[in-house]
Image (cartoon, rainbow, N blue to C red; front, side, top):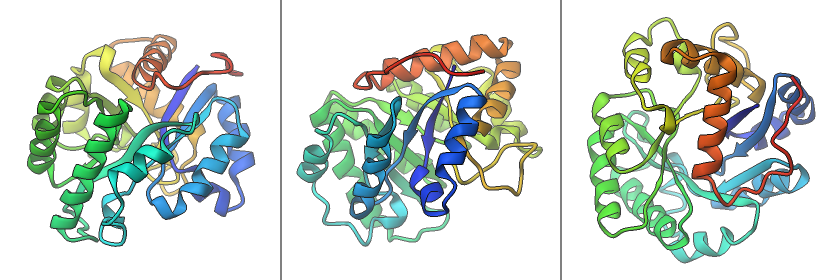
Length: 265
């Protein structure tokens, strides 16, 4: 089966299409999903979705876009919320200097808070980095130097520098539909050589629908197309890639206790 390691199911829920999207995901062989929190204020809605479904988990965290509005979120608050059995990661957090919807200083402060919470809980850190790779690496290295830090770079689409340094820190790399875009040759060149025991696949649904669904609302079923592209780059069969990325997911997110490792094909 496949795992969609990063999706925003609360967005699909608000659009009234969640149940149908989950059905299509099962038909596509997607047997597990991780729905991502971007705001502590909205965490209850994210958690409620995870609680309603087997093999569906969630995270708790503040997206860099929301950092200015939630700059006072404390590591202790994230730690407390993460005690719920359905919460298996900290984030999505990080730095976004492309849109810069929150000032850089606030983004960095909130990122450090999440790093502290991840270290304290032992849960994986889900990292967003856009046009900020040097600062992202610096803050991750700072946290790793204190010990007990692990996680992944989600929706990886940037530089060899980020992937190399993330791998050195023991992090995983998650690929999204961007991998299939016509202009993503440089990303495909990096993805081709990523170690197979560190790769994951995701949709970032409802964003970044892969080819052939560009322009449509993305949903977890579409992760199969990203997985097929990654399998070809890695010289693997699609079933082997599915097995590998599923194994990697449950190795990293080891708090997740799957009800079953099977999905309809």
